[in-house]
Length: 66
Image (tube, rainbow, N blue to C red; front, side):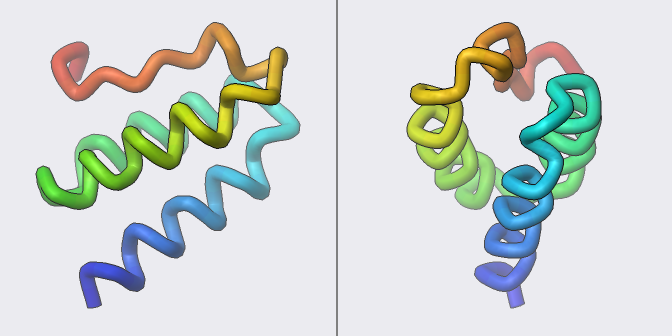
């Protein structure tokens, strides 16, 4: 089930990537909800996903800010 949650989170973030504010808000929800090992996987995905999307460059991935 855990793998399903991380995949669902990635899919949701992909769908919301058109709007940096929505993307950021959903990312914060994911950081609060996911387990540590899932956060590590999401962090790698986040770096790769946002690399080629200039509109998302200002979105930060940090579990420490919560």
